[in-house]
Amino acid sequence: MFKIYTNIFKKIKPENKKDFKVKLKSLGNFEIGDYEQKTLGENVSKYIVDSLDIYKYTEDLKAWDKMENLITQLYHYSQELEPKREAQFWIKDTSQKPSINIAFNLTPWINQTDLLAGLYSILQSVKGKKYSSGIDIIWISFDPELLAWALKSL
Image 1: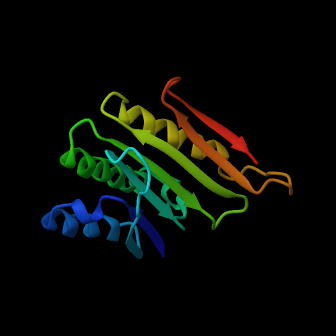
Image 2: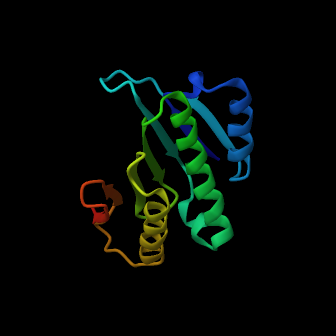
């Protein structure tokens, strides 16, 4: 079962909460929780997805479409609250050895299709790769200034 935490769940319209839960259901068993934000930048939507088996969604393009649709919908909820609102995503997959951490932001000025295609591509390159025993985490992040994905083994 995966978990998703967000600082905007309380702010989402009731009819969209139902849709939110239906879309998550297509990805498997899940739990939703509130993320309390105690920082500046209240106009940023944050989504933390924990315990998601990310490789399961790279098996084929149909599975990846579900993941893309979920991310797109979450971003749409952020935009409903405030146009030009930034959405930050942190996806943690601890079911793999080494574990995978993915971080990226979606904004109106970043091409979402290209960003997610790049994520799919980098996940395909990492999948099945053998890492030395000292590697505990694979960190994948998107640099919005360079408009490129970065991969780091820690």
